[in-house]
Amino acid sequence: MGFFNKIVDNMVSEKVPRKRRKRLIVVIALITLISMTTATVAWFTVNTFAGVDNLDIKISMSAQLKVGMEDYGTDLERYTKVITNEMVDSYLRDHGTNLEETVLDPVTTSDGTRFTNQRGTVREANNRSYLEFECYFIATEDMWVHLTTESTEQGEDDGTKVTTTSTGAKADVVNCARVDFSTERNGTAIYEPNRSTPVNGQTTFDLPSGTMQYSDNTRLFHLEQLTPTKATIRIWIDGEDPQCDDDVQDAQLSVQLGFVGCDDNNVPIS
Image 1 (cartoon, rainbow, N blue to C red):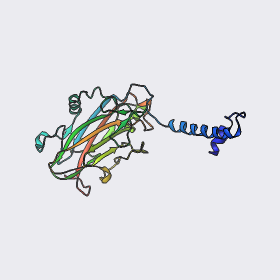
Image 2: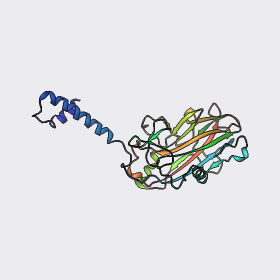
Image 3: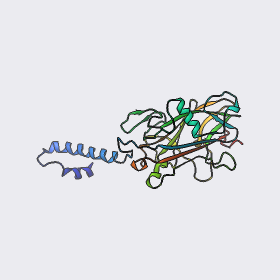
């Protein structure tokens, strides 16, 4: 407090009695500290209405792993190897909205399931906040599902990556994006592309930029043989991220997710 005392001492009138002056110095110092702290929070300018409104999604499965937008039981023929924008859009339309109208305005979360805006107001999914949809994973044998940067099929470039066609400062949108995966059995895992210092108490993980290495940190959830497992996927831009400022409004965001199954030793199953 000595540093602040020197700064704010001159701000306190000499006419103020010495006893009250000390108290005022402490109050002013605390206000200064709070101002310095809140100034580092990024967010969009409050009351702006131009979030990330051009979102592309592609999800791909590796060998022995399939996915569907519904629970088809053990009928493997009805599950697919990919989820496309059109499939997500169809899901959203069944729930009263659509992908074209989905806008990612800044939100934040500590656990990946409850989201608030800058004012601390709880935000609901798919309503100018964050994208949320459900899908069902199924596998032909027991496995741990991991995110992967590797192609899930030879000749395809469908590994996990978060990209943008926006340029300049708008391109920072890829650094404040988050994706999480929740299952009833394994809880929630938050993927933070280009991971830096975690914000808001989040526990996040990133994927290696070079050769993919699988570990307990890249595990998302466990599948039992021929047992459909519902996973809730959420995509958002985090207002607490230092790069989530007005510069990334109206940016375009592409989220490509590749999944691979591994055994208990984190070795991919082929």
